[in-house]
Length: 403
Figure (cartoon, rainbow, N blue to C red):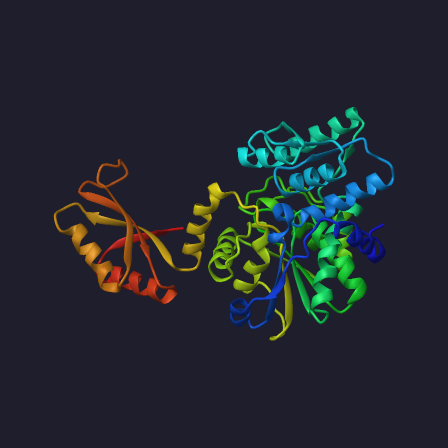
């Protein structure tokens, strides 16, 4: 059973290997939000995410009970590394099933921790189905990433650390995917501080838990699509939903642009590399998804930092657009000498900086005598962007914005 006693036992186990990650004041975010904000930096945890806590507690419990047959997990990310690390610590076999499309860096990272990697399936759900069958056939224990009370107890140790440092927290913001992290945190926090609010934040591209929370019953999504791959969970767990319905006060969604903006904010203002899943709490604060009394003490869990570096440039680009520091325009010009110069001069007059430009006069969807100009420009915020729009209108330019 998941309760405070189980979470305190988990804390004794995981303290053997986990870092007590920093929980520190965020002055810029506090000023912009009107709250007193503190960041729990699980992106600085060993293996780069909170998942080590739950995986280690589960495997430590198996070993304590004399079960050393080996473990199996399905994961393309943080859970895989947590299981592999923990199995190596206890010198037991670990097999991780990953989708065929898993980046080589993630496969290599898990292999280097001593686990056997099997690539199977087009997505996580297919890898999961194969892994559970494989575990049964091999007589090994399957370690679920969230639907396991010993895993959830390990994740709940995050709350014990936060509240030991700042006992008068009013709110904890927690990323939500499968629900293991928030189930553990909410159980621990409510047991020790009943008045505290626990607010979950999920991606709008993976809304199953939010829809289930609102409906009071499990509702699965037909598909998920989000840059927050750590919380890209399609199906709702009845086990975690029960804890969330019991202990969580609110569950909100943030969009892709908002997540990208939060990643960029954390990079620039906090000097922290945080993955999409770990950034959703900050996204909720930046984009006014949370309505609390001014001055509330808010703890935000940055759940991990294992971002796919091949996606980082795209995420930063989206963050720049969302924060009104970049505009992408397509303008229709008359294809004659001087048209392009008049357009660029209009932008120069507004103080916009052109960083990329393309000129197309041959596409079949153009009217005769027209040309499309695509341009990326650096801007200085919403007011500056509106000034640019008005200048283009005043100049008689027909344009549309791309996002």
